[in-house]
Length: 582
Image 1: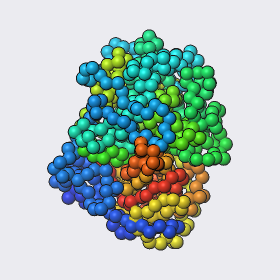
Image 2 (image 1 turned 120 degrees about the vertical axis):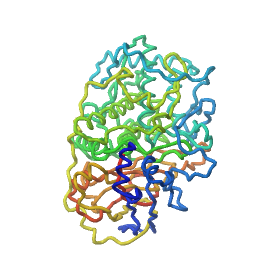
Image 3 (image 1 turned 180 degrees about the vertical axis):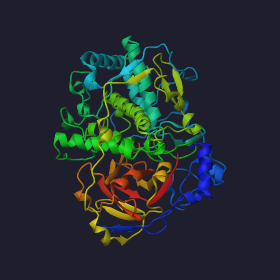
Image 4 (image 1 turned 120 degrees about the horizontal axis):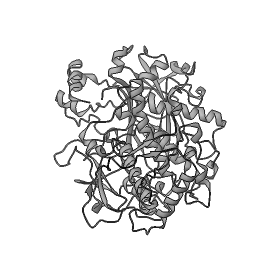
């Protein structure tokens, strides 16, 4: 938020803390035998607003429950705040699951010289046009096949080899890198505001390495457009067992022409939707994740992750679904950790990883385009220098070690590429509502958080601090449901769905409006082979402005929130409603 906006906010809500509304009363919960309690936690306002108000920007009022925040209290010892920086010289062994598939080391080759700072390509360089796999043509896909074959033919010590390119994801996602200045803290680029810029940089250098090896300066990486009907299957080129694009460590049940399921998480079995029904459900998922739930930068990108703070503060919409679900859908369920695509350490070993994340990059561009065309003022990137100045390390097409910042990756025209060849059919796929799905509201009984999700759904009633907000108020502030203190043991994938005003959630058809959001997390097991995972402590946010309008609940004094476990075990620390300005 800009300083002028912060000043305006402080004038509207003096003191500024009054803009935050906490769920202080006990939530009401139905159909669970778990003892729970609700801990009201102060909301971490934007740093600029806190500066104006004089409130400490690292407030934590949830004493005794560290899971409810990712930001430690200042103690005079930790270096808290500032950009995240990594150093290749301190890269160490990754945290791998029991029974991993070799190789077992993910750090890149060391460089004889210090990393050079990234410079933008020459403006006269040919503009690379990235097109979808289903429309780019056989000749272009043959070039991608050859590029992968050339990368695989390089020695493993070459940082441009396919082996080392796959390891980039492993190193930045399994605790191999640590924060410079805070070596006890890992760098995990998922579940935070680094998700999009890191992967954009990753694909940028991968594409340029491919072009160099092919000796075709204009080569553009194709993208797997799983969000449009024509691309909602694994591209056939990747299913050819004689192709360099083939990976035997995939789910054989999801070979083409199987339609992708953007909400997939099942350990066994598939849903019973027809292909047309699945496509319609996928389009509605995309609408929710790109429009309905993505009204602000922190909702779309993920939560701030600064130097001195623990990683994984909270993912953005698309990262959890469909990004994570595509990883799981592609990975081999017969493998103990759903390798290759279904777990962070090995995902980059599958050649589908790169077109998959190229599509993620395209969706970042699409989010901006939607905001510009429809007047959504919140579809803008962060301006926080802690985000802009954070940096990552990559080797370029000349095998030089390069330090690239987030701000380097914000303008794709300056990076000399663009996307073409596919539309956004989901932009008007607003999900339908379901009548009479909250009839059990009178059966609610009072319980308290934290609560464990195992086999039974849990429903809580959350009081709304404001009702019947005006259009102007909604444009100024997004009403957001915050799910605090999400904690898993990291040993398996976790998915739970969040329904709003749908206690009878079983009646909601796939893609229904009441299914507001899904929490999806890949496993993060440890390296010691004991099966004890790295605990995941994070949060999630559900945008309510448009959702409550669609449900006709603008005037309701409370909403019911139902958590439906789908896979794995998870604990939830509490619920609160806040009004966000960014």
